[in-house]
Length: 74
Image 1 (cartoon, rainbow, N blue to C red):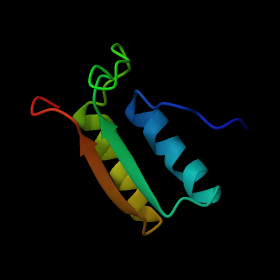
Image 2 (spheres, helix red, strand yellow):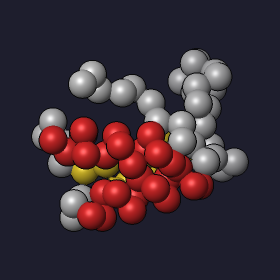
Image 3 (cartoon, rainbow, N blue to C red):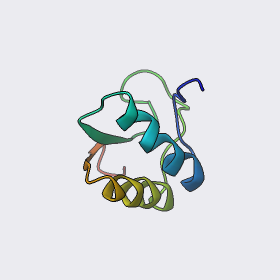
Image 4 (cartoon, helix red, strand yellow):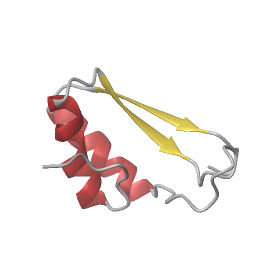
């Protein structure tokens, strides 16, 4: 199965976490940004429900989670 690049729903986030861990990720990082800071506006922005689902899935595996928000609004 090809690795997803983005998760935009709680279901996608929950499915993405095990893929990352299986491929050797040491932790799960959530980028909470719309891409405008990096000059890529329009990227899908994670909502709280999606972050919560990803964190809950990571906890099942005992994986560390971190979030990276690039703006105060994020």
